[in-house]
Length: 170
Image (tube, rainbow, N blue to C red):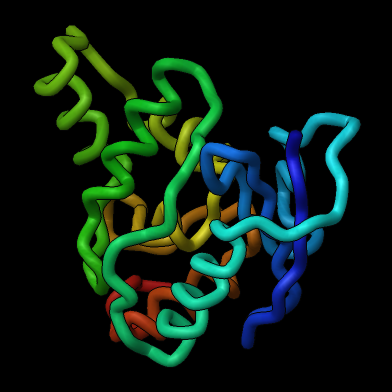
């Protein structure tokens, strides 16, 4: 069974979704792909992973590295799962480019060729915002590019992690 719960952040309302395995979704209200992995029969409820997620988010929004993320249950294609695993390796306060993720995929999984655009498609469909740090992925020149929660939220998250807007050429 899937459950949802809400929490508040300095950037707006957040919906969490989970099941008996772990967190399956974390979205800002109205975000692109909001609720994509939710079954029609999900219901409001509380799970231990929601308490863990709230604590993690409280530390994060206080401007500190919260460390290990709560238990996840990521659902997606094989390719998406590979990309999302790489996102989890991006250190707090650092950024990487879509192209560097493509090169990592080529090396790690033996792809002959991988496009940054394909990586961008998977990054954009990440169902667990903030915890799986898709906001840490930037364009080839270090510029801020799309974010399902909105570019303003992406910039705010990066600034929270100590990355100033002047670094991004925007």
